[in-house]
Image (cartoon, rainbow, N blue to C red; front, side):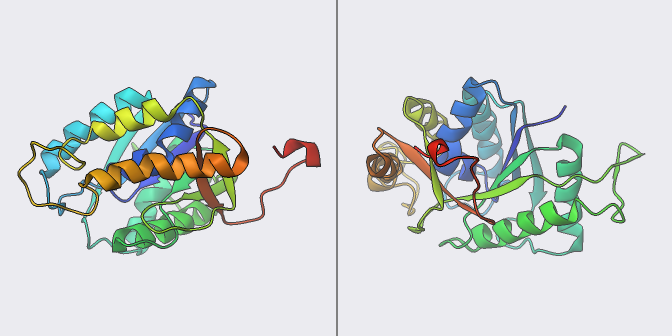
Length: 238
């Protein structure tokens, strides 16, 4: 199966929080989208890896993605080494996405910056034919995504472009709420975390509303690009 977009996150819920509405919109427009999680989020203060496995499956169903896979790297301790890059390369070559979405280039959680660089490196290396990888015993052909975009997470990073996601915020927030163990729940008695507050949940919505305000729409999600975004005409820009 070939994907149009592969969205990659260091932890289950990274993608939904930061690019969930964009993904929902692209799927509604007929694009095939998949999600790759690098870790199971097993070091998370709330819940367990097994709970997050179930939550991530539920969120994937809500968004309607074509596939979701977890590489089960060590949460908090994975490193951007040869072995890790090769595992990501195998997934890129298997699904041959045109676009890869990945973690913020800099963020509060150490895994986000690490995951961002790891995926960016893997996207480049995946296009080198002398790097050999196998899938189910068969040689994989090289594949380099046309675009690598980084979504915005905890820190306020200025986007290079924003996507109008008006009409898709409800789907995004529904997917986020699938992670009941992680986000605000008045009945949850586990320790409070930065993302478990009501303010954190609200901030997801008002950031998208603010990006939308800046471009004259209801909601938008922001991304940074590794190279200049290009258009054929000035009239392509909204």
